[in-house]
Length: 112
Length: 113
Image (tube, rainbow over all chains, first blue to last red; front, side, top):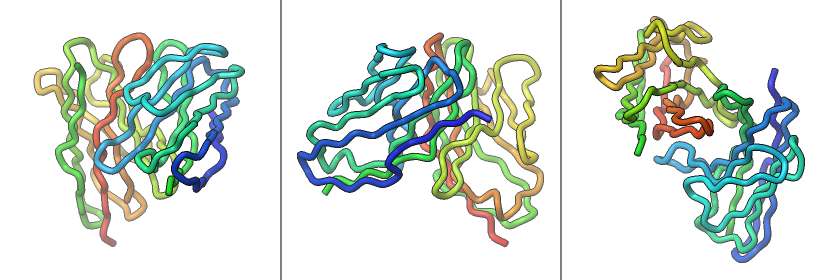
């Protein structure tokens, strides 16, 4: 069974704060993804990565940075958090060849 | 640009009734299509997928979906729903070799006991 974990599960910060969301996968997958989920929008892709040291821009990247330090670990960085970034964030991983993506349990971020 | 539309934001059915959740996609190439389910306070789980071949694909927990190229649709069906099927269902389109996914807005399914 593929495994993707996220931490923290819940986070509250203030406007202008600095936040790091962590994701780890133990599937030996090459691809990792960060999404945000908002009512009425489904999931929207923020950033993704093909492997350690690689970063690709997704569909809603503004205000977010990401870093892939190892094959297992993918981080999402909010350096100046804003209330518009209040959302539910999901990490996912997938193997080569277009296989399905495996999702983590999500991190709920609130920016006051 | 590709897109996925789930025209029903909310669907309510009685336990034991049949179910169809609608999905329409827009993509000029060969689509790879998925249905994912999100149970309360959980991540997304794959229900089924369609890559090619038989247009009716079977998934977990009695779900199936039918691909129609002429209608650009990928509707999800179940013959008899259970209260535990209450969840949010997402129709998802994969395009290209980079494995990027395009999600529909989701359909909230409520099953009344």
